[in-house]
Length: 171
Image (cartoon, rainbow, N blue to C red; front, side):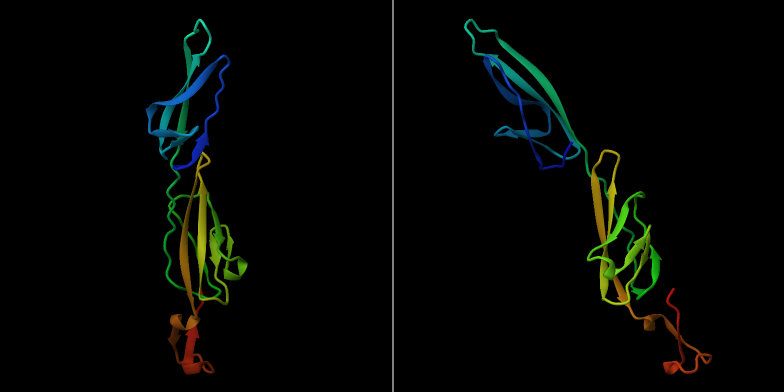
């Protein structure tokens, strides 16, 4: 398990001999007692012990298989600018993840996948985090811009008292 580029420390011990790690097969490198296995691949490593006894007892070896799963690809469906205080349903390419807002509740809140925009700030960054069955995490962010209701206003004869007869609808 792990992520591409992560080093794992190799441990092995030998009694009456010395041990060494080697890559038997796969996409891995060993350097200074650590192995790196590239994401989405596997590698078989061999630990070989060579006897230092006289007479020599020869060598013995054992294999260890490392498999590194790829992180899931997560993509939030983009959204247009929304009104302050408006509610929208956020979606992503995978379900079962967790929605959050960078900067905390003053930048909006989530109830499930329903996002409620704040009544202040110019925009917010929403985050969707998904953990797959292997325990690997994928994440995506989307910047949502807010605008005053005036972008969604229409002029009507029926709205006396409003500037210019505008009727605004937040939803």
